[in-house]
Length: 258
Image 1 (cartoon, helix red, strand yellow):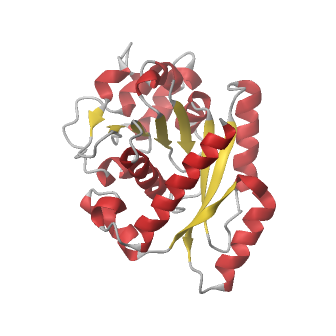
Image 2: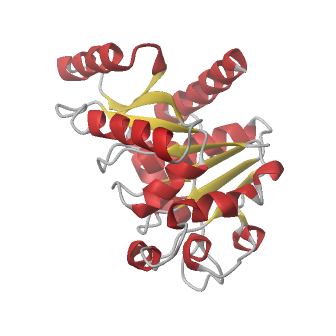
C-alpha cells in the first residue's frame, strides 16, 4: 500500500506547491509510482504540472462532495513518466461550506484515497494554506505531514499551531499521523537571517529537519508558469540539484525508518 503524505503549512508562500511538484517529479524519475493530489482551490500544483484546469470532467472537488465517485475516474496521467495527478478546480473554494452538511465529512478524502493507494508508492497532497475542512480531510487521510518552512524572519510563526493541529488529529481522527519531516526553502546563504532560521528550526524540530535546504532560485520560481517541474525546465539549475538531493535524502530516510 502506498504511503500518503500531506504537504502542509498554514502559512502561504513557503514553497509548499514547489516542493509538492518537484519532490514528486524527482521521485518519479527514480522509478517510484507517484500520485499528486491537489486540494488547494488555487490549483497551482495542477497548472504547475501542465494540466489545463478548464474543461476537466472530474477534479478533487468531486472526491469531497460527489456521490459514490470512483477515485480512479479523477486521475490524470501527466506528461511525466510515473507521475499522475488528481487536479484541483475553483469549485474547491465552496467545498468547505458544502462539507458541513455531509456526515462523516472529515473522512471523505480517506475513503476516496483508500480506493487507489495500492497503485502508488507515494501519494502527495498539496493542501490549502489554512486549517479548514479540506486540510482536516487531508490530515485524516495521510500517514504523515511534510512541512516546508521559508527561511524568513517569521519562519516559525504559526508552526506551534500546526504541530498542535497534527496532535489533535492524531488523538481524534488518525492515530498513526506523524510528522514526516521539515524542509527549509528559499534559503539564501549570503544572509545571517537564513542561517539563524536554520538553527532556530533545528532547535525546534531536531532530527525531523532534512539536511538538504532549497535555495532561493529564479529558475525554480519560473518553472511552474511553463507547466514543468524544475528537472525538466532547467535540470542544471541550483534548484533542480537541490530537489534531486532532497529526493535522495527523502528516500534514504524512508529506508532507514522502514
